[in-house]
Amino acid sequence: MQYTKLNFPKDSKFLITGGAGFIGSNIVEALLKMGYFVRCLDDFSTGKMENIQEFMNNSKFELLKGDIRDFDTCLKACEGIDYVSHQAAWGSVPRSIDMPLVYEDINIGGTLNMMEASRQQGVKRFVYASSSSVYGDEPNLPKIEERIGKVLSPYALTKKVCEEYGCLYNKLYNLETIGFRYFNVFGRRQDPHGFYAAVIPKFVKSLLNDEAPTINGDGKQSRDFTYIENVIEANLKAMLAPACACGEVYNIAFGGRVFLVDLYEKICSLMGKDIKPNFGPDRAGDIKHSNADISKAKKLLGYEPEYDFNKGIELTIDWYKENL
Image (tube, rainbow, N blue to C red; front, side, top):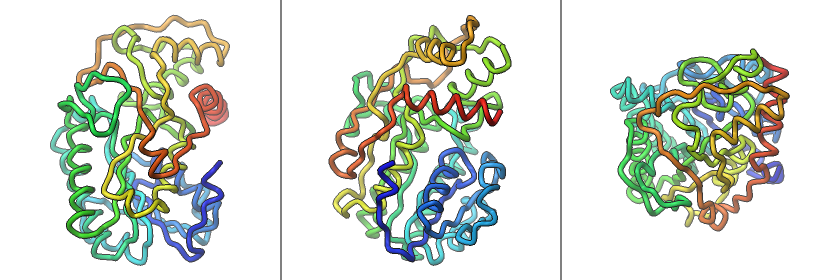
């Protein structure tokens, strides 16, 4: 794991928003293992206490329960902090179509609160989560940061707006911002429950229960599935990247391409299952194909993902077998 060799100033303090969520809790864990102070801000609307329970007795861990929609909470969270990893948001394209006002409030308003609080509190670097969904109807593969289409969902729009704010805060206020367009992140602690669960944990949960999962559409959609360790690496390397890398957004992926029917067959094979899936209607707002060019992140951030899809999916299935 390359990020374990990174050296921050020994008294560095980190804030992870959404730190009780899937991605956030994994970043928290990595930083605590490296010996740094970590503050977690979460309102537990989607995060889970079980994701951070093991950190509660760590003297370098601090939990702040609060909502990024409250500016005073954001100011308090950023007090004394050197580096912010802003993961707090509501995900899910289908849910954003059902609840556009909530997504505007949390994803845009909350992110703007965090950027402004970081600016006022003198944070050194603000790294934030965007999404590959901002590519919208742009059909070309691989996806290149400078070439995007029209967004297809409120979720995608919120992430696009946050990118614009990130650029503005860097230019106008000298807040060092770096945004990440995540491509289908998966791995330990990803929630398999609920109607809006991501596809990999949903498949694994169904197969563990000997049930047939539903694949939306014909299964010929393709995704650049990205294991969580690669995302941790990207976040930590971004915090130490040169200032010239700031004010930009980057694809964070492995650079592969897996079709959903092949994904399902791979999971079945690894789990020793032979269950035919059900096929349902296409999901509104979904991008058909997603595959990332990661050369920009490699060049400017030193990003070198170690975990390909095959390695990541084996580790993920092992984790679910032990924890579901």
